[in-house]
Amino acid sequence: MLKRELDSLVTQMHSSGIRYDEAVREFKRQYLREVLISNRGNQCKAAEELGMHRNTLSRAMAELGLSLAEVRAGLKRPPRSERPVFSTVRQTVRQG
Image (cartoon, rainbow, N blue to C red; front, top):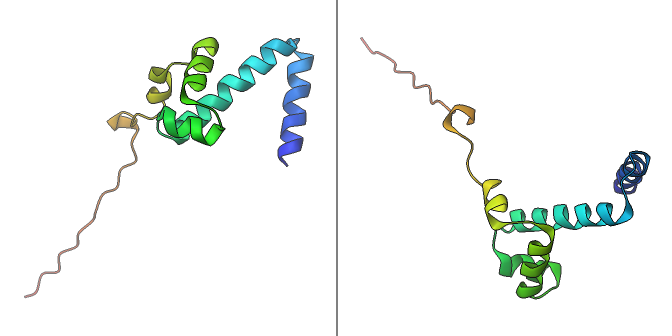
């Protein structure tokens, strides 16, 4: 299934005229962003998961224009108006 999705994505990128260097850059950016989000913005843990040194990750982020502020923005809780409401309905039974 993953291969099919990747094939479809590559076909779309090619047909829309995206150059190889742009495709590789966007893949790297999204991949690093995903790993950073899964590690809640912790660069040390993300670098370990990626098999690279933290400084290398930091340099790659800078080259790709990926900031921790952007990563952390994806971690913030949604505004109160967009949060699911879990109300507890208490039923009181009157005896009498």
